[in-house]
Image (cartoon, rainbow, N blue to C red):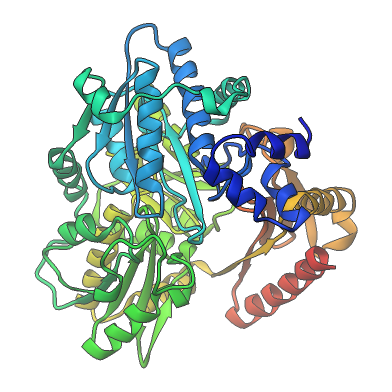
Length: 544
């Protein structure tokens, strides 16, 4: 159907949907809501909440869930069970109930968490409860207007592109949104199709997290933690119980409006502002902040007279150093990172006996490698991470886990404090030994159909003219061709003549194009100068 046909179809759904759509006066807004269906990207189904095919709402959740139910019915010969979790975002609980009601109407058993729960706990629960799939209602670290829908396979790993495409094919066959069958949850419970996941699963998960503990000596380290109104409050505090941890009280309770921050993204300094202010007042050494579904963690470190934020690459490199210092590394031990994660952690890992494997962007690819290692039996997963502040140590989950990462970051900071230095000192020591790896990320928002076209035009321009545009370019890796044994993905990586690199890709979760920079040099000053020059160049390319 055309945009206008979709729009007029949705006007017939219900009074609230009709009123919302009729109140829109901007044709571009109508276009943005209906020019496409939401698709599974690097983080699953994700979009702004509201009426329309390109929005998160009860109808698109029902449609996605019926598509998943039909996919599972075609894949699993016998009865199956799906675990469902949700975070603190507005409408997350409602969307979880919608998904459960559709699955139960399709005769699929549902295990639904009683209360909001982190994404890594859902990943753990799928396998722990022997489910055939999982759903987590979350938009991770996106702004407050977003929500999302992550789908997991029977191992607790987010579904990979091939299976996601099969789900999408089933979803695309569904055109009559209002007629999707649903079963009220109280009736599903009476029929034995709905059960509730209780505290025991969270405790089983925390038991596995604690097994990853490395440094258990009593420590004077002081930590300020903020869950940023999300799901991390209970599990992170439980994991950090041995330490002196204070909570940012104004950000402790769940709040889908995230009323104390511009955006609940712990990658950004302003999300940690209240934590840093409290740490200054209390004389704390470390600030931790987790995003709404507690799969990412940001870190600020007291160093000299200020608090310094670590990048995702820096945290990952420090964790690789910490883990490999304190654990024996067996033969065929693996470090897995993404192609847009810099090489400092990989360089450290190789020097300590780890084999390094690269994956495409998205932690599902790291989870898939864990599954591969366990099935083959000849390799052992040690640590996986991505530059976007996602880390996993242990195999209790198949997704990034800010609970286990928070535990290890605090233990790491405590160990370094006991050696007489901060994490910034530790990072500087790594730079002096391995060279400077300076990284940055620029994300450019380009909304709507016009924005989507511009993103593709930028990538086409760089594919055609990258050699003449980018100084010092040695070679180009075009992952759309399915290179290095990886599935095809729309990513360009420009390798420079000194092994530095720049990568560019469309976001899989927002209307953005992302540019990643990783500049290597023996001199911090020279690395910073070149980083600034390349950022200026790409800003001109994207915004020009």
